[in-house]
Image (cartoon, rainbow, N blue to C red; front, side, top):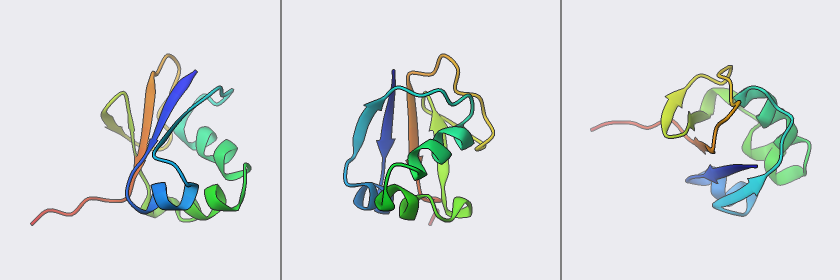
Length: 82
């Protein structure tokens, strides 16, 4: 089981801020593909992967990063500084 967290407009599109899932995915990208297949909200949230950032166990990672043994994956839009 892995805890998923969604922030900003991703949370609005999938309809929840967090959930626990069982997955066969080995990378963040594979996990995203599983989520997109769930329903239209997930498909919309993950439709533009250039607009998605991910963190595995609170470390910022690329979408091809492995998730084996991870406790948490978080998804959020790009951050801007100011």
